[in-house]
Length: 355
Image (tube, one colour):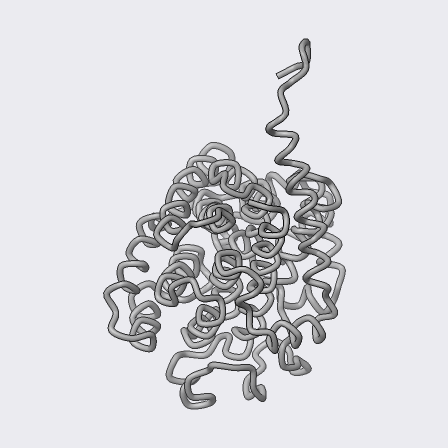
């Protein structure tokens, strides 16, 4: 794949993460019935009639989901790799922004407090039984950059996702979910790929992620991420129309903040929309519950698959302006770092060098 083609996919993924988050933020915490009552079927940005966490929120503003995707992408740009120290540094920098940090989920919020107090990020990320932390979707929602950094390499993407997860979500369920997202994004960067291959990559990566989590983190009770992804995709493929699929996914898979709900739901929506970035964002905004996170995850994958040329240009302009982000510039920098990483990994080692 050419550098331009890769940049377009990465830019599409970044735009998707922000658009899916911002559109989903309009309906976050609402049930499907409440969404229909307030908005009908959401298919565009419109006047906000619901602001669960931010009464000053404006149309097109992102939340913790996409802002952490941007933070993790920047950590890779700055360090040239996926490194734990850089991940922690950018996480803490992100948490110092009062506007962004107020959207933090339970695991991230608790982890940031403990890291700031001087605790070991590796241990902090395991969470604890008393607070039920470490198994929510905050790991998955920020792991797309791990896939963009390893285009076509599902296993490497899964391992990188585990590093991104470690400070906040060092459990087998969270890492499995994060790895699934990263693996899907890695496969979505492959020229000529399709949704079936992307789903297969997600399942493979989830298996790898679960094994990493069991080896390095805390085991938590919960269902198989890979099997629930497959169940969600089956619901999507057997549905009669988009609205009924959205309702079936909400009823049978769930759309809450637990990794085992939101990540499979995101893949179900991705499959239902056929990977179309704009349609994926729309379905996520209509599923209810944790719509912004599901939207950010699903639309990051769809955006990577579709590429920037398929993104709704009005939406792209809106979220770029409202959130003061240069998505194209960020994607260009990220693509350069990704290409440098690919060159390093393909260059033969010099004689006498350590393996």
